[in-house]
Image (cartoon, rainbow, N blue to C red; front, side, top):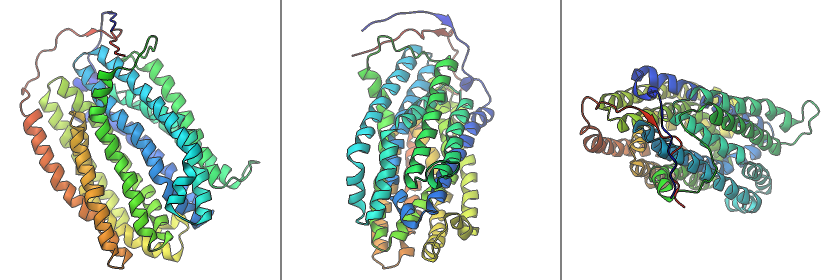
Length: 477
């Protein structure tokens, strides 16, 4: 263990001083906007692919669990980094904040190599496990292998954006995500259909445009974080992975990874249930998750903003600011979900028309959108509660809520409802799962309030002079 100490004055972070509503909005809006742009290009990706044929659209639905698993690993680790780094800054422990950032980047490199290997050796076996339709296998293999082999941009973007979120620099995320999304949206039709002299590459072109956008966003995120993020030091000279720091990161991050990864397993099993009816149903399910991201992404933007706010003010023992941030996040999330519910109830056929649906897909999809969207009324509250658990180092509670929703309740309910012989009954598994989760996370929230929030002083203690130990770096081999 080695220590090197340097002390300089540092200004108070705005997460402890700015009015909470203004702080939440100022941090959330750039993330919300960038996530909406990202959701838009995910939707356009499927819109363009649907112009190839319905089997290509089915292939994108089948590979979605792998794409989600990559995002789960990157985002879940980022949540752990976010919570520990923000809490360290709130406690003025700049040495731990720096070490947290560097260890987060290190594990993101490990993820990159792991998914590169999967893209080379595992893409085709994965597709063969899901379907025996050769065209779907070929479409899916070419798409997901490219996304995995060139995943360096995705993982760089995810971890560096979390470092910017942790320190309140969310305005830069608009640039990183927006750039990647715009590049993808522009290149998609060019590479898929062979415009402007580019050869027509079909599904493969969609994957290539996707990774080019991610790499561009990742490069910008790395540059901005190293040049503009003065709250942390990212000097890697003499760096060694720190077991204690990684343990603290994964204390929150691992439950978050599991929680986000569960969606992959849920969709894998749900596709199995739906394919017993028709592959058109799996195509619709892939389309649904692209569409619903346009509703859920703003919620995730709000929760990405509220995690560092709650974590920072918990470290600073500012109870009133914590409670206000949680209440506002629930209010905004619930409002967004009500808008999503209205759109899905009133315009389901118009929404599906974007994807050139067959008559069969339109019939299945209209009923599916209207039934599934009933769960939106409750989902916003549950997502915010999960983010609060993560910010306070209780990620296992978030994991429990997600497991309950997607595996313990949703998958078995879908399987049982499928046995009625009507595919329209399967969609009711979503509202049933959300009701069970509402009850569970409310119990957890009451417990968290009594154990962690209520004991805090009503008035935060006087802060000591703020000193910067940013070059103090404790690394444990």
